[in-house]
Length: 158
Image (cartoon, rainbow, N blue to C red; front, top):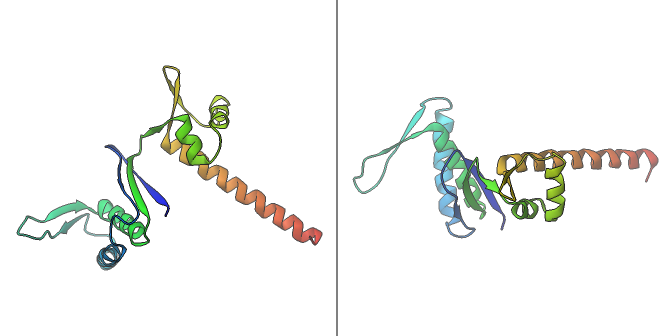
């Protein structure tokens, strides 16, 4: 199954692999959170979460609860989830693997200034956010070109 990345501000990378969490349990928890957020669409800014075993409740910022719901939605579908810092950097090989291209191709994109990067000694490092932005833009351009090609094929009766 596919793994989904969730970027956070700081901290280390942590992952939940597909199958580590029961999808049905995740679905039930997701439903409860969605119901609560639907009943309280804007307020409160802080949400109190009850904890079992006589422990004090947790008070979480609303955006954290929303992010948690998104994570649960992925787990409910049997996908793995990784939480990584938004300022995480990747190597050229990791970037190539993520894009599904060769490392030399990624190096060419970096040298041409298509994707921002920095050098650490002789090694290039790419912010994951910059790489994902490039991927989003490139995917969008590919879809647009495919649509235009499809329209041209329609016009020509192919």
